[in-house]
Amino acid sequence: MARPATNEAPAATRSAGDVLDELRAVVQRIDLLEERKLALIAETQTLGGSWEEVGRALVVTRQAAWEKYRRRVRDMLERSAASATYSEEELLDSAADVLRAVRRRRRGT
Image (cartoon, one colour):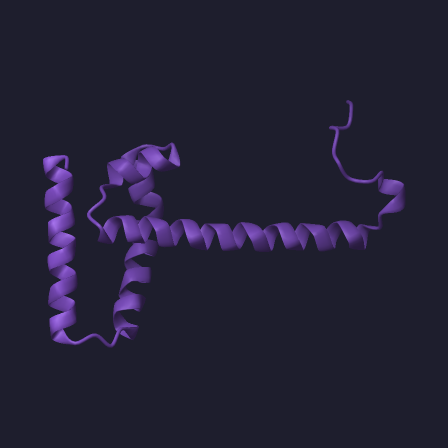
């Protein structure tokens, strides 16, 4: 079986340690991107986005998106709310903004 072409130097010039270092770096970047993806899903939810829309963006079904991310999104939002130090007035303003965004989305404007 032929080895897939890569942009990397031939194995003879790299050590296993070099490859493992690169692997660790890739895993770290993937973890950061996963966290960003989760934050965007949570933000979508707070702005009134539906799981249908999230699923479409992730190229999966609504159900698959909901099953995979709902608990993690809920936990992220709860942690965020617990650390928030907003006044009651700020919270009411924020809730009103979310409600307006949901109404605009439903009207299609």
